[in-house]
Length: 386
Image 1 (cartoon, one colour):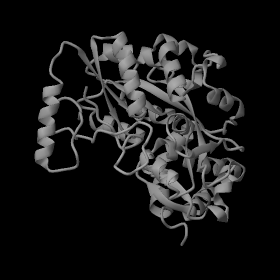
Image 2 (cartoon, one colour):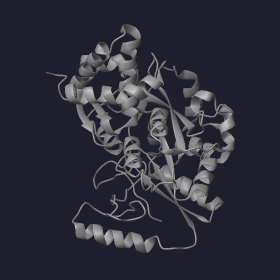
Image 3 (cartoon, one colour):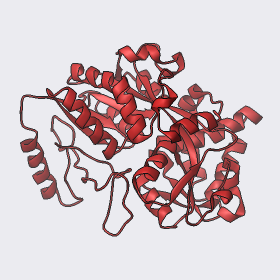
Image 4 (cartoon, helix red, strand yellow):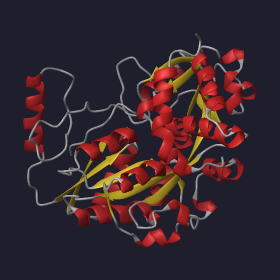
């Protein structure tokens, strides 16, 4: 089976602390003229290596009679592989092929492939990104049976996308260096002098998670003062505390575990999975003042090469079996309110009762988020201490 893993959540190098998903296959970029998306197995080397990998891709994806289903997703190698196994057992006529990349990268890739779609399903990103994709005509309407269980705010009124999980954003820390009682309890705590040079941040330009957290800060400023100035000032102070903007989540976990920084901001399910499946000394705190509860979505890509297979996968992901697989093995909090609490792991049950939802105008974040991030990148990144 051919897959392309992004370095996010999956990369592992000799001597480094292992990420939960194990060793990633390097990314192969699709050669010009290739009809299917990039497959895998190209180290960063010469064009000859790329050509050899492309030939291997063509050989390994020969016609075995199954329908290929291509999924673009940021959910990480371990979760994607688990869903591949379970789905293919249910539908042996389908060959599920996934490409693991950041959520912003998925949106950008769908835009670039608009005239010749390569993916069948987009699985995973904040709902605001699906709203953008829908507005740009990148998504195909499809209403799975489980959509009736979702509240209106967790799905598109035209059935262009549907919520799968609710992802709270949290503050994570190294448990060997930071006692639980001394960990930051809320967002403003990260600005205290003791965390100067100890904050690690996933590069926000490629990360839907960090864009959401930064957007929350700016949105708070608008809600409280009518202007973005206080929010941008807060992000400037955070920049002054930040040691590094890290390329991908796997490096983020590794650097946090090695005490290259002691605290970070990230998504709760990923930290829960780290706690359950690795020995990394990392835990998290749910911010007391409120946190974004990001609705994570799924959609059929407009012009999908294999729309029937795409619809079948959407049915599976949000159906009972797929939802419980994601919750029990990968700590995703279901968007469906009809899933009983006693069907969920203890950490998810506890989080449901501790979470304080940050009031957010998601339409505003979707409309103005790119503008805010551009301002941050051009005027704040690397300048907070100056």
